[in-house]
Image 1: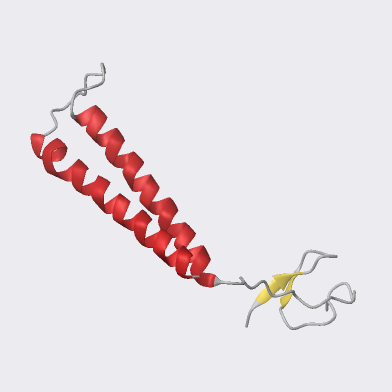
Image 2: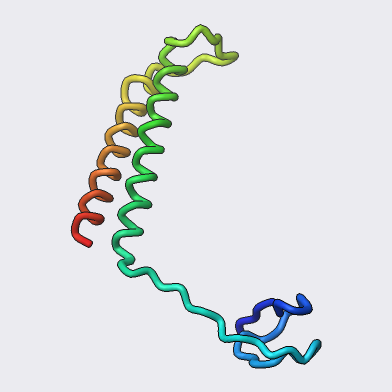
Length: 106
């Protein structure tokens, strides 16, 4: 059974209670929060995830490609800069694009 915290005494009580069994204070109903359009929120989340993938791909390519002055303590295989970081970049762009399409449909 779902529980919540009493706003008066702080003890854990059942969600459907109208009165706290510990402090005997009257409790108001728990407001239900609903999104107006859940597809819009999903679209925004996908856009955000896609942009984070693009940023991660740029950072990986920058440091693994040797463009920074920082010397890494271990060698990075050229496979990372040739195939994996561009693949991560393209998948991030695709994820952002699908999020924009979902947001536009909503």
